[in-house]
Image (tube, rainbow, N blue to C red):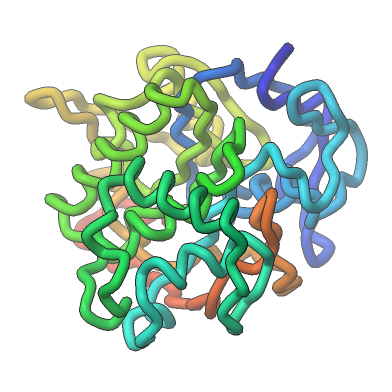
Length: 302
């Protein structure tokens, strides 16, 4: 049984087709990086898997079952940034908020919830953050707590939407290594969206690249090629491999360096499903990225 399967799925948002007749399957225990130009459908796809965006046609299945809101088998990390930085809530209480769906109020934690919170804090190496307020934590430390929230209730599929945004390269590396370690330890499936491939290179099993309404799923060597990416971007793309890193170029511009912001494709339904617990999407930050072209090529936001 596939962890996630799309069967001839079409997704639309605001009258615009995001994905058109797309079919692919993600296997159990895979770490899949989700990449593509800004607006290609990375966030919309995840929200469709959560049952928050209905498919225009086709079927999406999670562990063999059609998608539905509130699926306890899914843990979800939406794009959240600045709204968390000033909060005084303690790390333990913040994680516990996701256990029973409270968005702002502190939950009355049962013994079982408290034990689960302890389990996930330990799992992500954040036990020392339990009594510290979010406002005193670094971006990387807050990401650990967000990941801990996703892991409450032992989900089988994690949907992580751009968890590397606004983190420096060192913290990016730390988050990727942490997710990979947890994923291997638990044997779960991860879809990890990002605007750049390189931070994920050592963790990926396969990459899912979205663009132009279509999707390509395969190994890095199968997908990150001139023909495939040119089709997904709708314009000529070059792929350069230098010192173990991969650079995706349009003309003389590296296309993956121009979007560090929020994906512009939401339907603004803020009922964010945290799979097994609704409402750990505290304060959705809309930090839109802007493309700055540095040469003669064209900048495609990724």
